[in-house]
Structures are given as structure tokens and as C-alpha cells.
Image (cartoon, rainbow, N blue to C red; front, side, top):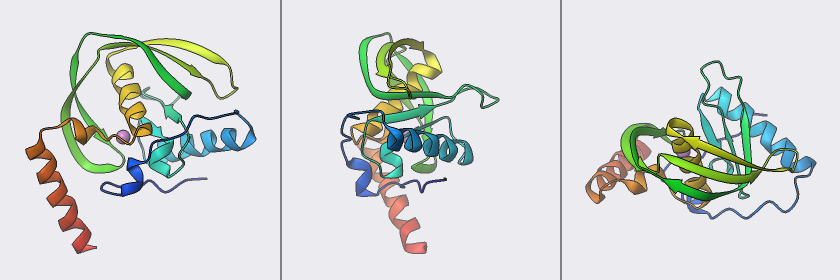
Length: 165
Ligand code: NI
């Protein structure tokens, strides 16, 4: 099932997601729907917060052929190093791209869609994507990392678009 994606400046994007208590059939269904929604959009990552489901789940696939689906439940960054700047976008902030600085290398511990714990080391684009999606679970958007001036301009643009609709 394809889910609706919340769009900036929707206040629900500011919700802090709760940890998943048990990876049961409801959570597995949610993961499946999130993959469908992400591939349909199309995007390379999606956090549960963006589809108004406030538990700590993210799905990612940065492969060109959309054949490397990857789900992280209750992800925690346990190590990070380096710095990288990359132009980011977000399905919740359509048609807007800006450079953001993040850690270049991270080690993350999470549960997979079967409820098993795993560790993953990621760098560059995958590391950026995981950090971007994990921010969503804490109610943070990539635009929050930009200068106040850029944020004001974006806010004005969003208000104008709202009036047009
Ligand atoms: Ni995003």
C-alpha cells in the first residue's frame, strides 16, 4: 500500500518517534508499505515519521536498480568520524536541494525486519542517507541544518505554495 508522505512545514514531521517494542506483523506490514512508498515516490530513503507513523523505522535503497532494500529499526549511531558535504533533498521538502555537512563514516546498530540485531559500517552516500533518515525520527529535517536565512526563504516559499493550492 502506498502511503501519503507528509510535506514541510507539516507539524507532524516534528514528532519524535518511539522505539519499536516488538517486530510483529504490524511492523512488518509497515516496513513493506514504506518500501513501496519510497520506490513509488521515487526516493532513496524514507523514515516512518514522513508517513505519519511515529515509531523508529527507516528504509533505504541507494542502488541504481532499486534492488538493495535495507531496513533499520531502532537505529543507533555507535561511532562516527570525518566530515562530508553533500547536496541533499527530501521527499517531504519537494524540489529543494541544499548542501549539508554530516559525518562521513558511521557505525550503526539496529534491528532488521526480522527483529534481529545487526551492525553496519557505512560511509559517504549511505552514511549521509542513514543520518538524514535518523534525523526524521527525531523530528529534524535536513533544512534545519541550513543557515537561518535559507530557512526563512524556504518557509516563505512554502507559505506561498500553500496559498496557491
Ligand atoms: Ni527526508
